[in-house]
Each structure stands twice: as structure tokens, then as C-alpha cells.
Length: 253
Image (cartoon, rainbow, N blue to C red; front, side, top):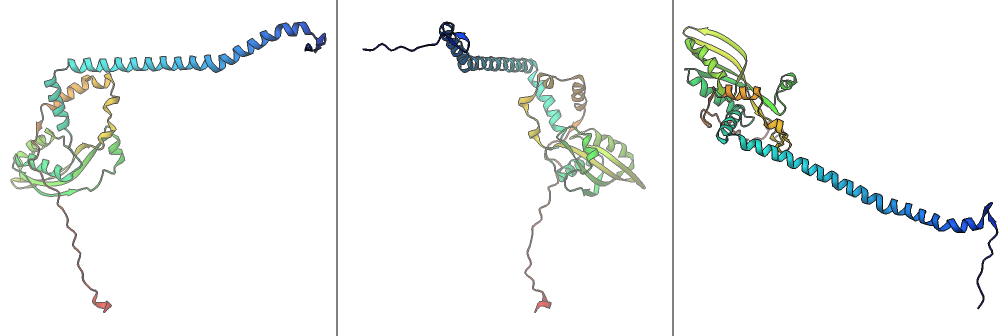
């Protein structure tokens, strides 16, 4: 059997062949190490870093939920329910102008007044400047109403309208005397939540849940208002039934 041999020159590219033979395995190891770092170690490190970040995020959210739970449990449930009733009663349950007319009629009847006429503005409020002053997601229901009643009671009537839940806002007030009676031409608005989906309870922070002094004062103030019983004095929106008349045009005969 013949021996296999390769003739290697003394120098390759000006470098001693012996040096190249000695350092070639080391160079191969360095290249393999760099490849393993890029292919194995760096992805694993990034994966571990991502897991650590996720763990930190979960721990932070868990702590936040725990703080919210502790705060809610520290509140008197009876007091919390009472405050919720006041706040929910302050707004109309829906955008219904006829419901608002019923609320107004319920209030004015107690003071001997009656509704002569009312004008409903169909659709949403178009006055953008008025809407911009409201809290996000809360809109107004405006109506115009003319009422008559005893002149001696009109001040009590106005106070009654302003101290009733749902909240009523008198934006226009005109009065004319009719002997012992008085005629009031009013523009009154109520408020309702336009879209409840705007309020995501899962995104509420502990600061959002904690009542501020202004909010506490508001709830205390609302407790002095009279809450109308639901369903009383309600005017049902009339249903218009469409009828088709099959009438021939006499001029087409």
C-alpha cells in the first residue's frame, strides 16, 4: 500500500507553513465558538430575558390587583352601594326625550304646575362647544317646555327641578304673568352615558378607584337631592304606524 502524502511548500502567502498548520485547529475552534454563540447562546439569552420581563410584568399586575382588592374590601359595602345609587340616579338611563318629559312632569305636578307644550330636539346635541364641556362619554338631552302654575310657587318649582335626580339643568328661563298664574318657558337638559363601552373597568387604576375630596363632596351633595322613583310620570314615546293608501291618480286614466 502506498503512503499518501501532500507536499506542502515551506511558506504560504509569506507565512511559514508550520505556523499555519499549528494555528488552523485553533482558528476552526474560534469560528465554531462564534457560530454557536450566534445560533445557540444569544437566542437562549434573549428568550430568558423575555421570560424575565414577562415575569416582572405579571408580578406588577398581580400587585396592582392585590392593592385594588385590599382597597375595595376596606370600603363599607353599604356605603358603597348607597354612593352607587346616587351616582346612577344622577344620569338618565338612556337617550329618551319622552322619558325626560315624564321626569319634568313628575316634579312640576308637586308644585301645582302643568305642562302646556313641549318641543323635543330629535337626534344628538349638535352644539360641539356644549359637548366639549362635558365629561367624555356623557351627553345631554335638551328639550323646551312651557308650563303654567301658581305664581307663588314658581321659585319652589325651580328649586325642585334643580334638586332632583336625575340631574336637570335649566339653560333658558322666561317668565310671563297671567294674573295669579305664571307661565314659564324653559329649556331643560338632562345627561346620560352615550356609550358605556368607553369605560373599561379593567383599565381602572387604584387612583381611579380612590375617591377624591371633590368626588366625596359631590356624593354628599347628591344625597340631599330627591330621587324620583323609576317609572313614575313617564311619557311613552308614541309609535307611528305607517299606512299605505292604494289610490290611483285620476289624471293618469
